[in-house]
Image 1: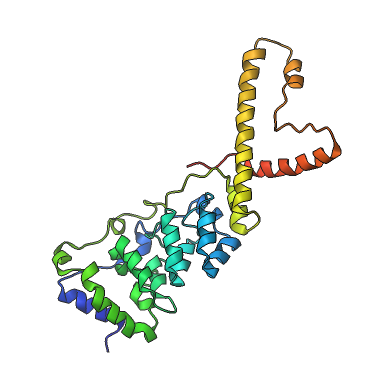
Image 2: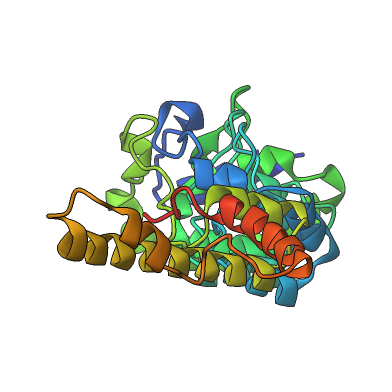
Length: 290
């Protein structure tokens, strides 16, 4: 009996394809994750993917988190969605700007995980191949190609699907010109996942990913922090123009009163202000902009 990989190789050869696989870790599919990607990976985000909650995922990513959240080893929630065979989640990640041409530090691409699914989800496989059909020829650290991850119990189903779809992704007319993808020809860390623009600091993003703050709360906190930064900038500009020639700055210190002052008229206001100041300290520092 042919293994699944041998079967795939044979139908490609019949069509004139001669393909040399590539080692994922030696290519541009392998990139160190950014600080934003790591900050966006936390217990709440993992729970959303495991539960298959597309609405919660869309809302959370819309708050400024990376659409390719992963840990320091490159093990990503996009990989997890593919492993779980959830096309809905994968669509949400892609809509938010997620990249499918990625790998973890073991050299596993998202197609490795799609093939590893407990039950085949060919919609996920199609989505991946439509973006990069060379992913079937990427080897992990131990030299394993994606199809070697398919459980033997599903080989027959996979063979049938490959036979039905081979011309979609590997037509005979393209055999002579088919070669490694551009990323397979580039060195590691030459194609990092682009970070989205976010008004939230990394600390706020971590709090959302961990479930310590809702996306709405984080957004409000970030907006308040940005507003206070703007007010402070205006105040400094006014101070420079009105008091720049004076040696006595006491009038400026006593007269200027912004919405972000820590001066309160009662103990209740002091307590409320202290809580807000704590949240603003988290949000301020540097808003994360890329």
